[in-house]
Length: 172
Image (cartoon, rainbow, N blue to C red; front, side, top):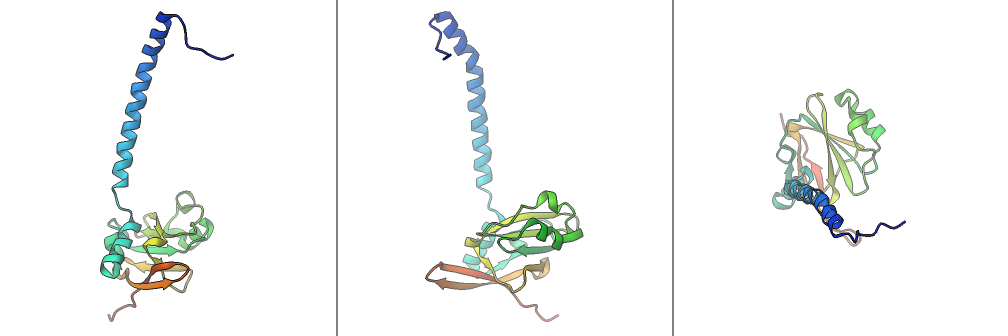
């Protein structure tokens, strides 16, 4: 049976009055959600800061890109699975199975910032903001040595891109 609007003028007015608070509440909720979304959109991500540094200065200082407490960053390649990431992190990130993504997407790297074993922060990094260049499956950098040089790259298939290559350790 189809619900049709009431033909009784008194009932129709009552229906409009009872629906009005819901409509106002709904509009207010949407407005608040939009403002929160706009505020979040205005905050650059760690990946955005890495890309900005790479494009503007030819190098990336991870300590400047990730302005929160951390002592080590571990960088995982695209397609890395949660179980492999958590196995590598071990006791450095005891909540890994609950907090890390299921896997790393094709166009991304996973950056895991560790704060002296007091927990981990998981950040996605888009390849469009730089491809990390290293020979092992996981790149681990201490905060004081987390500086990368930008290596431009151009190919017919990918167009212009750039790699982020860890600087060799300096003399001590």
